[in-house]
Structures are given as structure tokens and as C-alpha cells.
Length: 546
Image (tube, rainbow, N blue to C red; front, side):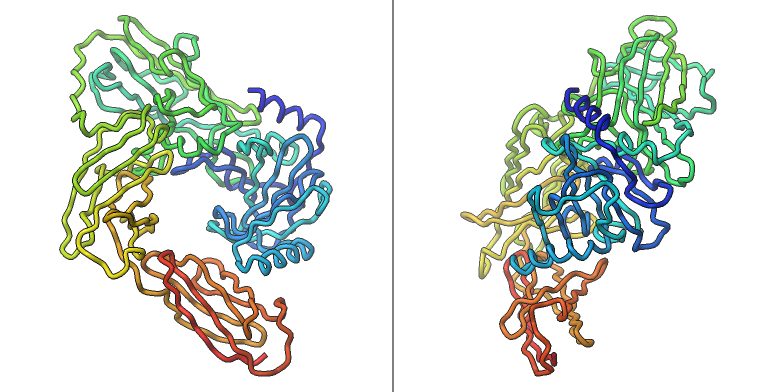
């Protein structure tokens, strides 16, 4: 709470401006639930084009510039007085001064992936100062500006609209589509069933009769909307009251980065995977520590323990205070509640302790704070002919962990070089999960119980599929289909030259006129080295004229 108050105090004396020079329209807002993370900022539309000027939203200094990190593509970080940092992402280009700083850093560290840190006196900026042009770099599906605000010290994510309200118009109320009832297994029934059930809001005040007995949680599917925006936005605040008493309240205003993946627990992740609609629960699972959730003593679960009518009211609001209410009545009707199915205790992972799960050929370590609740896993072992280990899976559908765990698999047979072993995760596409070999075992990472895992071997170098020169531009394509590409380096006559990634492709480009290599018109020797995650190297050489 103190952090929220201090952030709001900053807004009261520090002047903020718009990051663009036209009316702001949003394609995404802060805190929208997404698989494995909250949307950490706002997405400002750029008219489906790149190249729009981007401006600092307040006085401060450029404290960091990154290239190729966190899915941000090209990004600028500006630290402001009072403890707030703004982050501008998916940029096409930096200003020439910032671009020169980045280029110098890249050549010094011999890598295109950059993380440049600047001192407060190195690059001060004023409100409205031009810093970059918008683009579509990184994990961006269309041109836009992704803008984040953070508490500088804690790096908690903040809602940029708290500071940029004067530049956004929104008088549109959020809309709730339906609610979901979640009878607690072995403890509750809703409409005579132990299964979760959804009911649409055909009107703000439902007249349909609902019945319940025992403990039942609720959830709501709702979206926010905004003038001039065709996007479906997330809800800022949700309140559930029962007979006038608040049992649950959420206010998505300040989210610690360490809690990001807990969105899968607050939201009905399983339902989202099937429908792409998020029902946000109005109760908290015991392992969900999101500070934006506030619940009653029963963690928001409603106890229907009297044979009477209960009046439930949902209120959904946006950051501008636009809100709408939805209500329905539930009649407490005494019924026999089926007992909870007894799990296989040997296969139960506990949310409140370290879990060391052992089976022949397998060791699984899930640390405390990785699970929303106790979960019974259903381990399956498959023997694959010619495989280097058994193939293991642990859950019949997607079940992401809050944090990384460790998986160790026993190697079958011998390989030429054990240092080329790694753990591969089969989940949609194959993912490299690290690999450390020791005494016949390979250790890697795990963060999805619904995937399958096995030991893989990679002693093949990356592939270089093409090379061309056009004037001062060198182009080369490289990829690795096994452990994956880790790094690449280019050299002209033994001197490092920077190759940069072409977005959404395997192509790399070197601009020689931006390199230290002086044009002489002579024949020069190019050496390009690509390295994968198992440290296999492919060396490509060619002669160029420059």
C-alpha cells in the first residue's frame, strides 16, 4: 500500500506528457490477463505503420537501452524523479545519439544483443523530448508502442494510465459477459452439481433461480472498452459482495514481477486454453500471493450454510471510474455433498513445501512457491526405441508452474561426448531446457507439467543457408534445429563486425559503412561463426570486396 501511495504522490508533482503527438488509442491496457503473464503496460496504436515519433513522458534520464531482450525488441528506459521508470518498447530506431551509444556498446561487447546501462548524467531528457521512432521489433505482432511504467526500486509494474489520463478519453463502462460458479470439491454444490458452471448475464440483474450448498467460489468474464479503440481490454477493478459484505476485491494497479505467472491461478487457465476467454476468479488459491487480490477470511469462497436467499453483486470498473453492476440471487438449499475423491498421496505435489519427486530414472524438484495449490500429478513414462532416456510427462493437459523447477533424467547407454547432452521439452515445438551432465544423469529446467521431457544429443553445428553482398550490406542466414542458436560473430580481416537480426526471420545483416572497417575497394576476408547451445560451432568464410 505504501508503494502505491508513494507512486501517486509522484504523479501529483511530476508533470507527464503524451508519448506520441496524436490522440492516444489503445490496443491493450495494463494488467490484461494473458497466458503466464499480465500485460505489463499499455499498447498505443501507431496506425498500423512504423516510424511514428516517440517522446519522453516526463523529465528524467535515459538509464538503460536494450536490444533483443524480454521480447521488447529495441527499448529505451527513462528514469524519472520520485522513483518511476518508463519503458518504450518495439521501437524501430533510436535517435542518432542513442543509436551511437548502443553501437559502441555492441562493438565493445561483440554482440548484437545489448543491455546498455547509463548513469544519471550521461543522457538527461526533458518531457516531450524525441527519443525514438515506433516499430514492430521483438515479440510484436503488429506495429505499435508498448509503454510500461515501473517503480524504479522494486521494479513493480504500474498502470501508465494513472499518469497519462489527460491524454486518453474513456467514458465507456466495462461489460461483464457471464459468471462461473466453482463448487469446492468435497465441500460444496452449485445447482445440484459438483462441476464448475457458467451463466451468461442476459441482463445486469438475473432473475433466474440458482441454488447452492456448502462452499462455492465464483469468477467473472468481463472486458473493458474505450472510445476510439477496437481492442478488448482488461478490467481494472472487480468487487464481489454477498448480502452487502465484500468477500473479494481486485485492483490491478501495482504488480510485482515475481507474481507475474500467478495470473494463471487468478484466471481460469484451463478454461482459457479451451476458449480463449478469461474467467477471473473471485477467490484466491492458497499459493496465489498476488497483492492486487483482497479477500475475506475464506479467501473469497462463499459458504452457503443457511437455507435462505443470498444476494450477490459484482461491480466491474476501469481506471477512469466507469463501472457497471451485475447481480443474482442464490438460494441455500441443504443437500448431500459427495466426498472428495482421495488422491494418490505419493503423487501429490504440495504448494507450501519443496517437492522432491523420485522415480527410477527420474528426479523432479519443484520449489516452494511454484504451485497455486496442492496438485496430484499423473506421471507417465514412455520408452522410445533408440532414445537416450525415457520420455516423461506429468499432467494430462497444460499446467504451468509459477517458477522454474529442475528435472534430472538417467542416461541410457553411452554417447561420444556427454557435454553435448541436454533436456528437450516437447510442447507445441521442441524447446531447449538446458543440460548439465554428471554421473550418468542430465539436469535441465522445467516450468510446464503438461509437456513431455527427454534427453537429447546435439553434436551438429548450426546451419548457414545463404550469404550475399549488396554494396556495403552483408546478409547471411543461420539457424539451428536442435539445441538452438546461442550466438554469432562476424569478422573482417580479423576485426569484429556487427551482424544484426532481421525481425521475424533467420537473416542477419551487417552494415559495413557503420562498422570500423574502412572502405578500400580491396578484397577482404569474412569469417562468420555461429554457435549453438551445446557449443557446436559452424565457421563460414568468404571473400568480399569493400
